[in-house]
View 1 (spheres, helix red, strand yellow):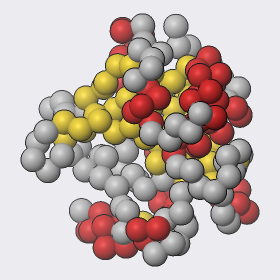
View 2: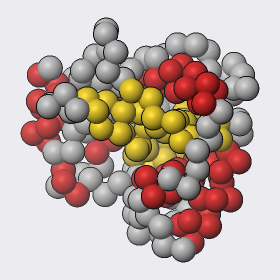
View 3: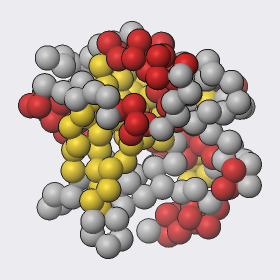
Length: 207
């Protein structure tokens, strides 16, 4: 059973930001506030009381991220290997039984993300819960960077990455994973919109 405050929320801000010209994506302004801080605040506001701790995975500008008031941890794997490295860092540093991950470039993520992920994980007795959201054509698509997972999976992820694995869904496929759809009546269709480029960031602000 997932208890109150038994989830640590991790903001993934460790990427190169290559599609945004190499800038540190999490520190780019969204309506006057860094995107990563928007994400962090929404994780702190999660309903249900599941989220007890928060932390950030970043590889650049660590002091800027530390100013947000939560622990900041760089990848333990070198050369910006991707979000799975952030998962690994989070699991290594997590002091609660469960870790919830979210990327720094989705500043409108649902405030009931943790609650629905926890409920689905428990209902299916799964090891991992992964969000899914509708695309522009209305089709559901999994959002692998939004995962709730047991810290008992650390050994599995260490093994997977040491063998060269880098894709989230290739790793989660090794474990019992429940997909959690966020396409119910009342769900914000913009909740999982992300900003990979400056143009997408401006468009997201305009929403």
